[in-house]
Length: 120
Length: 210
Image (cartoon, rainbow over all chains, first blue to last red; front, side):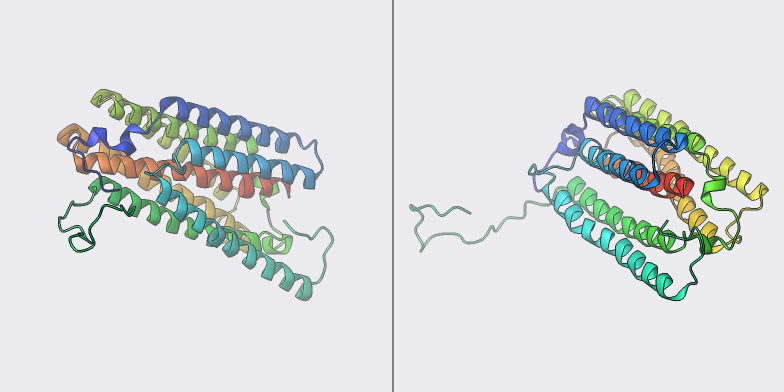
């Protein structure tokens, strides 16, 4: 993070953009989103299996976008961006997961069970 | 930092006495990346709120996403946003070659496609309001609308930023300031596509399934 550059065009963060990488990321993302939309709209799978499949679609899409669009890898120039993202992920999951878990337990113990009620 | 056996401890210099300065662009983009991660925490709290407010009792016997989400309509928004991100990336390919026209055409295409995304979103929200589904309807619709519209607000400010950058590059050309801002805006715009994957899969599609 300390090399100087007179011409900003030659900065490594400019030079690491890759049109082919962006196009690959775009095709992977759009293909998986199309698959998820098609499966959900046609409703041909049982809900739990469908949820698992679209979760996997989302996970692959996000990983592809982080790699191809944000250029996060372990190269010398990007390592600190990657480290901060890796440290961020547990915070993100804990914030959502713990809140969700606490309220689902609360509802389970305090709400009258209605037909059709369940984890959404 | 490697210890050389030839270094004489009596004359060794333990610190660097000259200021080499910081790489201005990298310092700014790294700071902006940390801001984007904290912005991600805003979405984490909104996803958590949607999670606890998407039980059937949260909709107060009113409409649920299963009745008002149209997967293929929202898929069009996904296509528009991903194309916009791709166009911005192609513009950055122009910057890499030092081509002003390549960068500006990429930014312009990204702007137009972003407007398409926002237009589809606003049309969707107006349609919901026409059917009496607003942020006031129930806790579930509050969480749904607030989460999706927070993302739309990010897109709006991203569009303002893209417009500003088009003007700045036209007037100032490629300077350390404008190139650094273009790099930060690239991260911002690409981050919105990543957040949208979560919003689309876990709010729109999962809500439609439930």
